[in-house]
Every structure is written in C-alpha cells, then in structure tokens.
Length: 313
Image 1: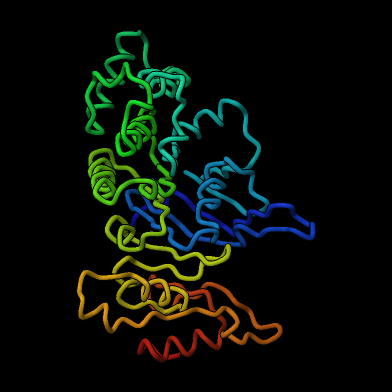
Image 2 (image 1 turned 45 degrees about the horizontal axis):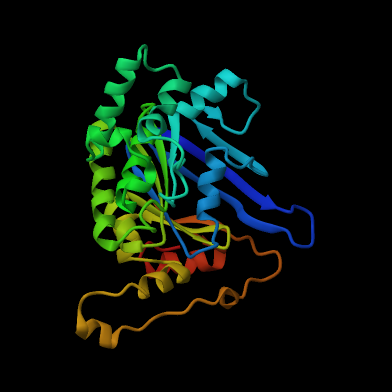
C-alpha cells in the first residue's frame, strides 16, 4: 500500500457562518491522497472543488476539520519558518493563466520569486541558470525569460505557471482547473506535460476539473463533489465503468462521444437530490460498497448497492 501524503478529515469551509446567507462551500468531507498518485476532483461549477483545493493549501482558513500533510496539521498554529517550509512543499497551479501572472514582472522574476523567498540559489548566475532550466523543462526557451506575460499565448502562460510551481521542488501540487481556460488542442499538451513531470520528479497531484474525460486520463482515483459534499470516490476505471451514485451517473451520461450512432441514442440522466427520500434520523455518510469504492449514502442505500454489486449485505 502506498504511503499517505495528505489526509483530509471532516474538512468544512463555510462562508458567512451563522448568518442567513451562510454558504457551506465544503461540507464535512474526508479523503486521503497517496504519494505519487493523482487524485482527480470533479463536479459542476459551484460544487466546492476549487474551495477544497484552496482550503488545503491555506489560501482559506478552514472553518473546521484537519488537513494533515506529512503528519502535520496544515491549519494548526504555525510560525513563519514552519509556514515557509509548508509553502515550499505544497504549490498550486491556478485556473486562469492570464490573472495568475504579474503583468509588471518579467518571466525571469516571476519564476525566480520562489527561489528568492526560499534562498534556493546563491548567485545571480545560478538564479538565471535555474530559471532557464525550468523554462526548458516545461517546453519553453530560455530566451522567454526576458519577456512579459502578455507576450505569451494561454498555453504558454500556463506552462509558466507550472514552471513557477516547480521552482521550489514541491512534493505536492494542486492543479485547480489548469486547462479550463485553454483551447482543446492545448489542453492535452498541458496534461501530458503534467504526467511527464510527475514521473520525472515523483510528484503527487490533486487535479481539479469539470472535464470528466480529461480527469479520467490523468487520474489514478477520482472523487465526485456535489454541493459541498464528496458523493463518490473510486479508481478512475471503476468510477467510469461502474458509477454507483446517481449524481455520478448523471455526469457521465452527459459526456459526448465521437460516435453518431451512440449520440443519436444517448440518454442523459438527470439528478434530483430529493429523490433519495431520506428519513428523519437516517445517517448519511461515505460507505465502502466494494474495495476502494466509496459512496455517500444511507444504510438502506448501502445495502441495496451491496446487493446489486454482488457482494451481499
């Protein structure tokens, strides 16, 4: 069994807590991420997947729950030196490659910012060489170091964001919808680059997206979120071949395929959260229906799923 790198325990992220307009963006979710794997998080816009990523990396202070990274609670009290160590180990690639790069800074200084903060280079020559190396690692040229972000395409800017994240040699990267703002032709290039870097550098990813087909391509396991809840978690193959939660089934039924015959007969499933007919006092939680395949359901639904999956009660 692979070693756990990250443990999320009962994470909650509420906005306007206790007020009439309280928003439970992340509502009591738990999962683990293992070293060297890619865990994909999918769901429609507003389901809380990006907020989950931002809470893990401390861009938001969690309302409740624990984020245990390398055995240390991320949201506990931290000294400046402890935060510095944490910020080096965990990095983030943001959704918008246009807004996430400072337009007033040259690429050299954008990528080297982490090197400077963490004192990872000893001279300006070493600094320049390291930036040039990072640019070549992500498929750009060292000549790009003297340009400004506006001189690059969207795909190139996202590569710059990846280079900036890699500069401090992190263990774990949160990729927050890193391809959603890119053309389809560029998306595959960026995802393939992430896969190559993972093998070369032994990285662990949390890959957040709403494109299920791309998430399946890059992920070892996938979690599905719905209105702040994690409703299903399984290996990529198991989730696609045997979705158990009706919301997951609805998402998968919406994926188009390049097959005219299939598209003519494709039936899209709708999901109504009220269809579960939960009774007062009925406990709803993540339950392991088959090994490694978890579903957010009641005891009654769990027993029915066990029967249909052929594993008994």
